[in-house]
Length: 131
Image 1 (cartoon, helix red, strand yellow):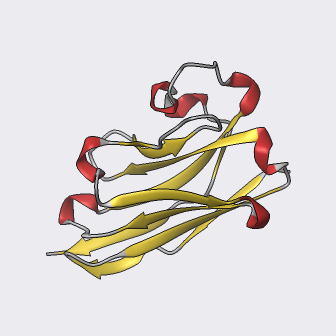
Image 2 (cartoon, rainbow, N blue to C red; image 1 turned 60 degrees about the horizontal axis):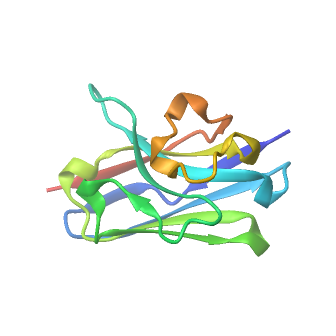
Image 3 (cartoon, rainbow, N blue to C red; image 1 turned 180 degrees about the vertical axis):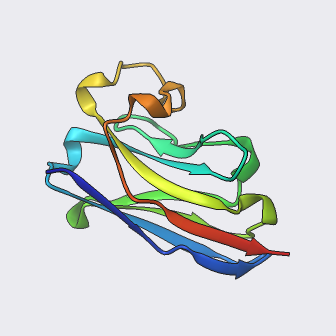
């Protein structure tokens, strides 16, 4: 059984930092591609950051560029989202999701895969940024 478990969310003041972790179990780490998504009340779910193997750079939604960093530790089956200089607009439930590698088309950037195409999801972790 594939499981994704997020941690690291919480309440932080504007300008502060958090690091989210997503640990994947029940699957070979390289068999999936991981994306970070977020959703706040009344807004559509959006991809925040993703990296597919072979990509030269990670994708970041414009609103987080320069502030968020996607990284991974294959030895720990874990991916991270370092979030710096947090803003109130970053308040949302953040989730990691796994997409089977067989679905990935070479040359198609990870940001072009809709959240509905992902196969497995974590439970989500709340990030609240107070102004």
